[in-house]
Length: 316
Image 1: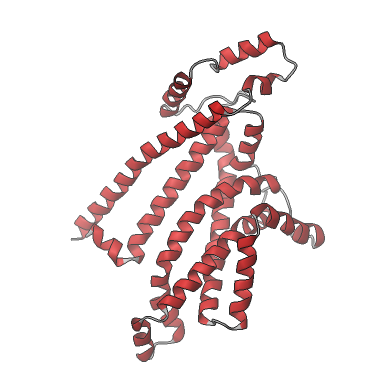
Image 2: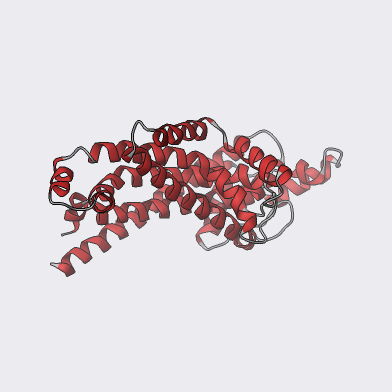
């Protein structure tokens, strides 16, 4: 039975990994098409507005920008399938090597902000549900409303003004140590924390009214044991769904956060690439972000099997 369950789980993971192939192809086609239709010229962005027309045309020919759309897309995908994401129009550097350099900073920021959102969101959500309609619940809901209504760039600027400029507690730019990660991590995770907190509160309130919770209490179990062992596990299923979906917004929000806090990550570099019409770098960054999102969603789906017996039974 155990080997059959393990084999079914492996088959499910393989199917999901294979499904990523058409997903990534679709993303690459859409992004390539949008960049192809976007006004502007990479040759002019590189050589300048006052460059001779002959030089601009020669550079376009060199980059293959005069070729039809399908020819350009096919050439790019052929290289991408062999691990070659092309050369940067701006610097001439290899796109793959550049992304390897900037990707770790984005991973650190995203994972730290996700940890902030999940840990504090679940903690305050539990407190709000257990002490519903008290001052603890009201304060938690108040901060939750602030988090939901405040854009990432605005919370980032407020955090810099308060904790860096006024109080001088934390640095406001760069990523040289853990202290540099605190402000951008909380700024990026603040909104997601509010969503998870409200979801946890709602789920916990629903679960705490179930019959099996009353049965556990009638058996004399401590309230802490009932909440964290019986109630929390079942309340985590919708929370896990929210956390998985919010991961995408955290990855996307890193573009703004890295720009505000001058973090040398993919998001900030992608903004610079968009300004410079550096299409290979934009494509490589978007594909890497999309692949990361697909992998994180796969991890969330696997975690469902450990929390929900109905999902786990599919592998038995």
